Amino acid sequence: MTHEINEEITDPQVRLIGEDGTQLGIMSSEEALKVAEGKGLDLVKISPNATPPVCRVMDYGKYRFEQAKREKEARRNQHIIEIKEIRMSPGIADNDFNVKLKNGQKFLKDGDRLKVSVRFRGREMAHTSIGEDLLNRYAAECAEMANLDKAPKLEGRNMSIFLSPKPNK
Image 1 (cartoon, rainbow, N blue to C red):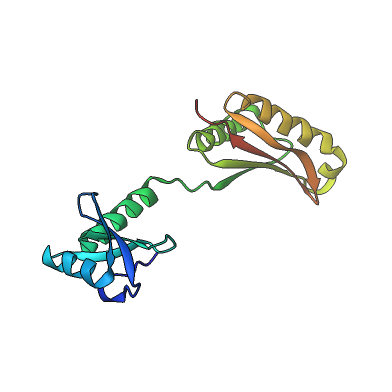
Image 2: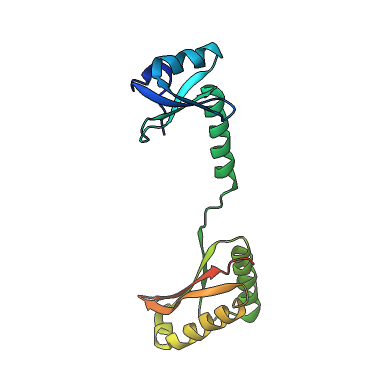
């Protein structure tokens, strides 16, 4: 949001607020500009839609710096949720399944969504129920830390489910 400052303010009258937040009253924009310059600060229009517009006496450079600093801090603290994928085959062994399960739980703990898919090759297409049971077992193992977003669904040669982490209490 861009603010009008100093000479850019062309309104005939403005409501002026001092640098400490005190009301200085309604005056012409020229008078308000003289007050701001007398204190070595800027006149900034903060509420252009009010009648009359509200202007404040402040150090605009310092204000912009503080605002940029707050935005940078907010960007640093936000976490982008990614979709991680784990692929298995219907004939997966128990130990391999457990390794995939541990990795998936680690992704969910980090706050990422998880897509678990089973790829069917050749004659495995005749036994899609094995893959469905495998995905249901995976979802049951992750039930305490994740919600099942999408039940097992066959799309071409892949069957997949989506898990999203439960919100922290």
